[in-house]
Length: 211
Image (tube, rainbow, N blue to C red; front, side, top):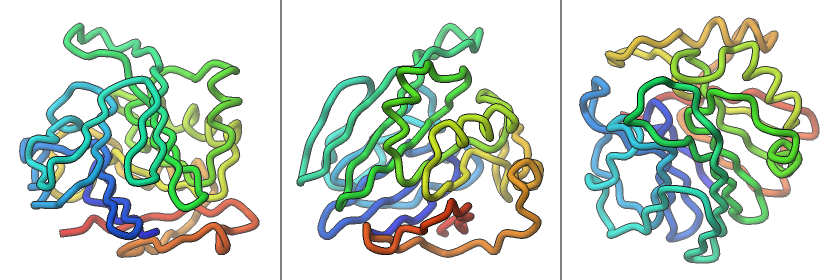
């Protein structure tokens, strides 16, 4: 399996001929998504920076909420979490558990309230955890670190933080790295992972934004 970060909360997850795109964004974020082909697209909540799936090629299955879904031997479970955001146009955030090649991936979306103990128990099966690290419209970095410790994944991949070109107000990655006790993180262009090469101890993986 190969994971590429397209920016913000959008990842391109490839397994064989199947491609999953998470939280596709519009150009109003500050830069274009590109022109990716998708088999499946997941949307954590209604916002142009997270639900611009119409730009995707390939007539993907678009998943926009809680439930169990399956396509191309990929099983996806959506779990709704409450949002304390006063913006009434936004709906509940959906956390997605994605099973690919025997690996459990968990995309937290714009999680901005601590998950319940029952949800933590379910999310605790995650091997790879995608976490918001920009501290705006989501949990703050201290709370995110707490969620990481509760879920205890093998790999943590930050997302939803300030990078070059992003016009929305977010924190940069540095405060999150400091909170996690990481002095330096060298970004990778992509992550290739299989069930046989998952690390024995937790790793924080920073990805370069694909251009």
